[in-house]
Image (cartoon, rainbow over the protein chains, first blue to last red):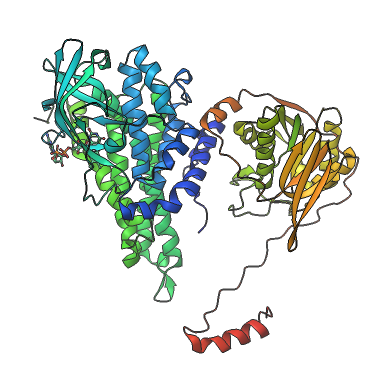
Length: 389
Length: 251
Ligand SMILES: Cc1cc2nc3c(=O)[nH]c(=O)nc-3n(C[C@H](O)[C@H](O)[C@H](O)COP(=O)(O)OP(=O)(O)OC[C@H]3O[C@@H](n4cnc5c(N)ncnc54)[C@H](O)[C@@H]3O)c2cc1C
């Protein structure tokens, strides 16, 4: 198999800096050499490739856009996006791991935490010495997290947490959980060490999607944590939603990586697979599919690229992130499904990456705000009328 | 220890090359350039040596401004500084000219060890390293697969047909590096961020008055004929053997 070259139909590479391209190419090689050889096996077994944790840390892939003084690389957001793109070219589960660690655990500590909390946790999280998870979703509250039942109660110099979270990426393998819970009716974030009495994180089984990623419940039964573990800045849903904006930004890029992987597989396959004495790529219907994929990926790249430049210039609005997450994940899912078709029966085999990406994307479509919720966010933005309730 | 590594920016081996308008060199538009993979072993070995005994790693390259990315990659991996010997038409220069330009620059530097890749994957000449050592009048061990240093002495190992050769000698010395010497590290993000702050000195390359070799023309290899399927099962073996003997003449 020829080495992955990505897609650059619109000469976007000319707009990336030398540094951004170096970051992208480094992660591309890393994924080629360290992720792809073992990913199908982990997918089959339903296990996360744990040896990647220190390897990604060594390269600085966690919280790569956070400041150097906390042990991070201080990259711009375009370079950060390119990292997510390349990781998800490998597998959405690997990108999810890095997204959660960086955007959903390190970011809230950086953005809403005290200086002591930053000093204590960010270097450890950057170096992979500590793993984190983000507990927002509950069994009864997904798209509507504001209804959450998990509660924190003040008791002397502690907070006592009770409740349950569900669908939590990295839960079982985490050292700390960022738990969102209501304190006097207001959503607040708490840093909860997972070895605290009363805390457990059983792994959820039976997934057909993101099989190479750990998904867990968090069960909190009178979990007592010191008062200084509350994130002091950031009250209400604004806190978790601010984190989600960061993670969704990464997904907008990540989805493109997945789409490039399935498009490239379909293109190569179509050029080599002979039916009726010709490569199937010579049939108009097959070309139509490939053209749609290439066009949609190219449009998605332009969205992600401009979103990134806007973010670096401080002009990004969260609704813009919703548009890119919504669009690019849908593009990736459609690309994977059509690539599956192009491969015929081979499309269902794990010998090719297509079916794995396709199943993974069903989660990506739903988590971090479902596709439809993002439509409603943009709808509310352009009409001024909220249609959630 | 002062360690020098000569590096070249080469087209990614996956790139489909086209011949340029001059008919003598490749068309560089749309070509993805990378650090020559054999030079990467040199950079890695230099970094490991520096980590073991201390010192400084300098990377040198002959080429135009656009050829700095190989040096940046080396700096991102951890090299300390770069020296670029500026030259525009570097792809038409022969190995001796390149070795001379490097030697002219290296004469004025302090060095204990020089690394060159055993070859550049584009030119495939295997010449610059040994020529450079000769010009510098220092010992050269080519295609090393393992190296040990003890003060100013070295032991170098190289694979030879069916066995291994061991050389010992004194520094300064030049080594050309082969696959197997080490596993080059990835340039971590911090290294990439620091690379742009590291200095690259630029001076004009001093070549000999004339090249002793001139590229006359460059052509792509003929398209390989399509594969042939002789048959499906054991019955096909005699015919396959016949074809391999008579047509392909490989048996
Ligand atoms: C693999 C995986 C990993 C995850 N990791 C995490 C994690 O690390 N941390 C975390 O907190 N959560 C995580 N989640 C949870 C994820 O964010 C939620 O699944 C998501 O927010 C949707 O919630 P829900 O599944 O409860 O669906 P629901 O909210 O019940 O939605 C069901 C359907 O109804 C639609 N819908 C809901 N409300 C409306 C409305 N007002 N108008 C129109 N349609 C509506 C939705 O679009 C959807 O199609 C993960 C999920 C998965 C699958």
